[in-house]
Amino acid sequence: MQGIELGTTGLRAPQVGFGCASILGRTGRADSLRALAAAWDEGIRFFDTARSYGYGESEALLGQFLRGRREQAVIATKFGMLAAPQSTWKRYAKSAARMVLKLAPSSHRLLQRGAASQFSHNQFTLAVLQQSIEESLTKLGTDRVDMLFLHAAPASVLEQDDLLEAMARLVEAGKVRVAGLSANPDVVEIALNRDIPQLQAMQFPCNVFEISAAVGFSARGGRALVANHPFGGVARVQQCREVLQSLSSGSALGAELRAKLENADDAVLADVVLNTILRDTGIHIVIPAMMKLKHIQLNVGAVRESRFTSTELAQIREALAAAQNAGPAPK
Image (cartoon, rainbow, N blue to C red; front, side, top):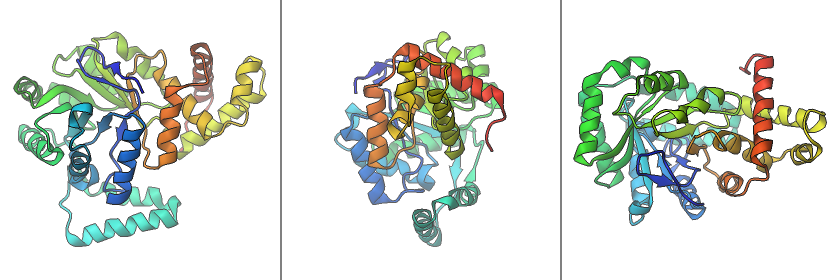
């Protein structure tokens, strides 16, 4: 994949990134390393992690993988969410949970609720910032991170001038290249409206039914824009399939586009989801969760060579938005 400029940050990367949230959490060490290697072989160079991912250990495995590759990679990490220390029994429990997921994938939501109790959110203090960046650098085995995000930040964090200035000082010191905000689109909107100079990268959830909030972000400030959770979960994927099937059998679209959408398989779904988010929106990078070779290849292939023109994607985007407005979002 060819790289693109990430706003005016001076960073450059291909448009599909690799999300590391599952590494050493939902996915074990061997499978995580296989996924990282597959992503690298497919040309992925943007890796998004966090101090809390893998209960504090995701960064270390990513750093191990990137040894000898660091200068070719863009590393984004986050702070502000703390994982509880993992005792021996909790490590065994994680392994057991992974086995349960393999045997019963439907148990994911229940296990996810249990895992959430292992984290402390909204830890945005100067002490946490300093400790987190030093731990991140050590775990990643590098002298700098390319992006440092406030993790799942509420709007109140934007009032913490001392914290924002401390992030700016990390940039000046060379430990961070670009400081940014990872938050819901409404918080990102507030930050962009205030034009906070310390925050030059924005990360936010964005799926095909909820893209309208993000489309205008690129018009303000040349910031790097990173979209996560593009498929939106099982319910959103199913809803997207249903809408595409309806479009393929209806008369609202031209015959050629309807033919492309007919019997939409996983490749078509990936093409629609990723390119409606990336094409002509100003969003620079999308970060799907993909720990299987098939998904990595489908996602990279969809962005590398889309079957849809920009005009067709605009029509699909409009139809998906209309479907969302026609009824409540799935539970």
